Every structure is written in structure tokens, then in C-alpha cells.
Amino acid sequence: MMSDSQDRLKRAEESGRVIRKVKSFVLRQGRLTNAQETAIKDHWSEYGLEYKNEKFNWSEIFGNDNPIVFEIGFGMGGSLIKMAQAEPNKNFVGMEVHLPGVGACIKDAAELKVPNLKVINHDAVEVLNHCVPDNSLEKLQLFFPDPWHKKRHHKRRIVQPEFAQLIRTKLSLGGVFHMATDWENYAEHMLEVMSNEAGYKNQSETQDYIPRPEFRPLTKFEERGHRLGHGVWDLIFEKIS
Image (cartoon, rainbow, N blue to C red; front, side, top):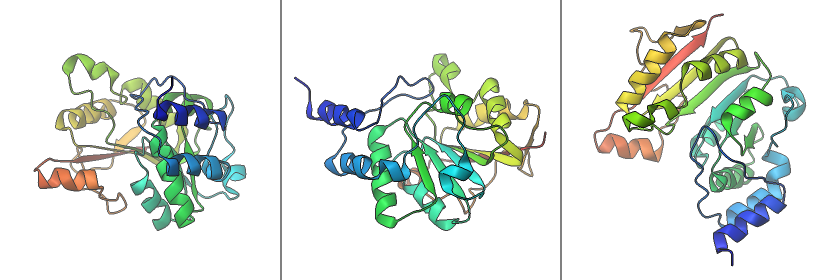
């Protein structure tokens, strides 16, 4: 017999959502609430993008030629929605493998009537490789990815040389790759990888980290970290070639 959570996930799949094996993140299915399930069912056609082995046409998807901001791993979507609301002249695309997070984001976006937002429930590397056109993104955001803090797991971290170059192909000239983490060791890893990659320029005046930009909302998770004395490191690298 299926659990209540499994049953909800099955119904979500039947309504058009296919849960695939994740390669760059840990899949945390969790519990899909009634509200999240309803949001996916009722508003997927408005906010959802299906993974297909073909390139997205951003102009057709959004009905305009505004710049595209792409975020990998938006969690429950709160900060992504805030950024979309703050910059209505940009289009935001969020990728998240956690289905309840996708449902929560769609629910809140629908309630707030956010027009410039789309979400994808699939693996980031596959989406970038097969769906995102080259030179089409103004910005790619990667906030608080899984740090894989054990040394033997560092090779699983998504920020690696091959990934950095994949991102570079998707950014337009002058576009930026913005990362943030609350793990100092991962911040050092990100800085080392990105500093050694051709075609990028660190926007930090000190060639390391930058203060949190005002356009990146302070999340509840981050606020809690600050209260506990945890640091947060932001890095922004610009595509120069």
C-alpha cells in the first residue's frame, strides 16, 4: 500500500509531472501538501516548464525579449518570487528537484499573480545541456547548494570546472554567475574553481568575495545563520569571453 505522500506524488506524476533520477542534487521528495498538489494541478500550465530534449524559446515562453535570470535550486521559492517581483522587466526561471518546493513556489506565485516567473522540476545539468540556448542568460544564480561537506564527497559538489564552462556557454557576454554559500570551505572551493576558469572575471574588488547584494533577498535560513554567528559568502563572476 502506498503512503499518503507516495500517493500524492503519483497523482502529481499523472497530472504531467515526471519525477526523474537527479544527478546534480539530492532528491528530497518530502510530503506534498494538498495546497501544493492543487497548485501544481491548477497552475502548471501557467508557471511550469516541461523538460524536453530541445531548446527553450524564451521569447515565446514569456511573450517578450526581457533578460533571463535562471536560478538552480530555489528551495520553497520565497526569495525567487521576491526577486521576480522586484524586477518586473526581467524574466525569472527557477529549477528545483524538490517537488513540494515547486508546489509551494507555484502556489505563492499564483496567489501573488507574479507574471514573469517559470519553474522546472528536473536535474539542472540536463536542463542546461538540452533546454537552455547558448548565450541566452543574463544571470545564473546558485544559492546555498548542497555543500557535500565531507572531504570524500567534495567531488559531488556541483561547482566544478566542467560545470563552470557549461554555465559560461549559457551566459550572454557580460552575464554573471552568482553563487552563495554558508560553508566557508565550499566558498573557498568555488573561488578556486572559478578563478582558474578561462572566460570569467571576478567582480570582487579584492578578487575573492563580495558583500551580499541588495537584490539577493535575505532568507529566513540566512537570518538564522547570522544569529548563530554563521558566515555567508557571495561570489559573482562575469563572462568576458
